[in-house]
Image 1 (cartoon, helix red, strand yellow):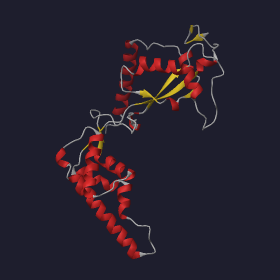
Image 2 (cartoon, helix red, strand yellow):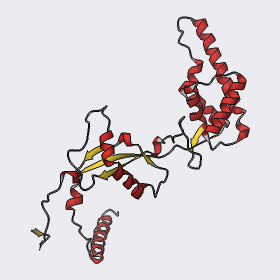
Image 3 (cartoon, helix red, strand yellow):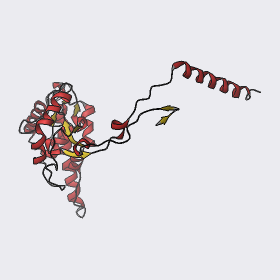
Amino acid sequence: MPIDGETKTRVISRIFENREFGFLKVTVERPLRMNFEATPERIAKLDEQKAFVNLATSKKRRDVLAAEREIAEGQKQQNTIRALLAALEGNGRYMDRDAFDADVMRAAKRTGLKILGPLKKAILAALGERDSDAEICRDSKGRPEPDSELRDTENIPLPLGTALPLPLDFGPDKPNDRLVASFRDDIDAYMAREVLPHVPDAWVDYDKTKVGYEIPINRHFYVYKPPRPLDQIEADITELEGEIAGLLKGLVV
């Protein structure tokens, strides 16, 4: 076909397998790492935590005196928490959440204060900061907790020889066990090749694995067009500079 005054060959149609347009959307997690420190600045952040603020509130709107007593008791509890945390300032920066949590709970026990789940989370959120050098934060079963800010996804092409239809159970609440079982080895191989050499602490949340399809026109039909020679580009720039200079002359009074 004629292109720019020349006869050139172009591919205008191709035949593909269905699986060549498919991919596995895999969620890659990385562990949460945080340091903790009981500085005045971080303790002040407790006032931004809902569970801590709610200690000094009351739902007894019809009984004013009861509400005032409840609020006063909550404020007293808040002050106790601030004081016990301030006492930990001398311990410096904790690089292990479990060590910090243990010291907080010991301090609370000495004061007779019970720190339940939501309040504990509020304290950890206020006094903690993400730190790539800190120890990994783990759940009660010792498993690494994922850091939502480091979460990423990888699109893995369906491998050669993929049998169709795919083993999918459709529906928002349907498990993807059959899908993961069919492609587990391919996902693991991709991770070992493309991800783990760069971020060795990453892992796949297989429960979030999905299938997607796309038709990448550019990938299959793109034709590279080399840039024009530098002398032609330079000549065009020189010509434009001359035109601009002429226009500017007309503006001079």
